Amino acid sequence: MSRLRRCVAAAAGLLSLAAANSLAATPAPLAVISFGRADQDALNFAFYGAFGRDTGIPVEAKSYDGQTTELEQMVRAGQPPWSVMQVESGTLHRGCAQGLFEKLDYSRLGDTSGFVPGAVSECGLGIFAWSLALVYSDALATAPRSWADFWDVRRFPGKRGLRRSAKYTLEIALLADGVAPEAVYRVLATEQGQARAFAKLEQIKNDIIWWEAAAQPAVLMAAGNIAMSSAYTLWFDPRQQPHARVAWEASLYDVDSWAIPRGTARLADAYRFIAYASAPERQQALSRRIAYGPANRRALAGLPAELAAALPSSDGSLAHAVQVDADFWLAHGPELERRFDAWAPPICRQQTDDDDDDYQDRADCQDVQGQRRGAVAASAPAAAMAAAPVR
Image 1 (cartoon, rainbow, N blue to C red):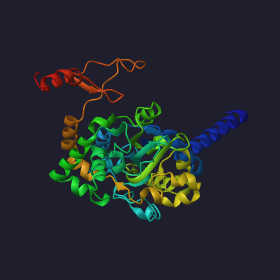
Image 2 (cartoon, one colour):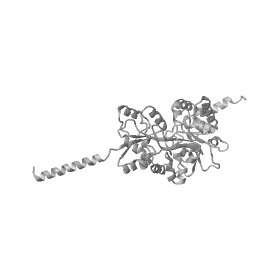
Image 3 (cartoon, rainbow, N blue to C red):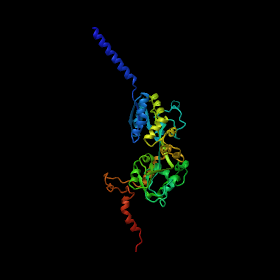
């Protein structure tokens, strides 16, 4: 081989070695799985991109629907490709009991003493707190302050919104009936407590417009269909909804958490990511972007006072709040949802998006104005005539 060829070959070898070393020095992306909802951009901003820049470990953000079927298959197969997951409290409790998540070693996650109650658990560490609270229009002459006010249709006439589900709505009914926040689930676990909650709801059944999707209360309030509602406070960020107010008394709150799929090959990197995302400055970045309360309450001190006070994990918000009991709903949810579904009217389904009066045929349903349609509405005059005395 000529001297020139030897030099070219040597140079090519050095380039190949440099490329190989460069590839080896760049870690494979860390797969972090979240719900891909309204908070996805905020998670990217506060955690994923920043973690990649600060540690050199890129994050591959993926989404899932909150179900664990795929995770179960991965864990059974060994070494799941997912390294960190965002999970709701029910999924966390159930998955931890089933062995789907790693039991966390908190010595690898730093000081968690300042976290929201319920955010530190065997298999998960809180990302943020969210709330469902009484939300009302500032056009009201008198501001409602409690769930008891929500039930007072004489003092606060008009329609009010409630989530069409047993979960959250039965707790609210008991709070309106005078049950102390700390006793709600103890009472609701009894047949007498359940009957009490449904009897309380019956008092305002004709004044309720039911909602299902998180965005609906804001839409209904903007349209003037309701003056107050139970609602996820995320959708009533004062920066976007200046004419809405939140009454935090006896709000319900819960926490979304990070969990590590059991058997992941990237265990050390998973711990590093969760510790990074739990630091006050990263939690502040999330709350500046979206109105979730930082799970690490040390982050509140670094936020503007007005913003911090409007978040679910502030002192004022948590003072008399009820933490949603995931274990209660895992045990009692199916039976209570069936009972509730049989009690509450179905919601009319629109056939078109641009005509509020164009509904599918239903035997009995409630429209967006809170009016009953179908068999019940149609039969009401006949029933009234049948009940009237013969003259």
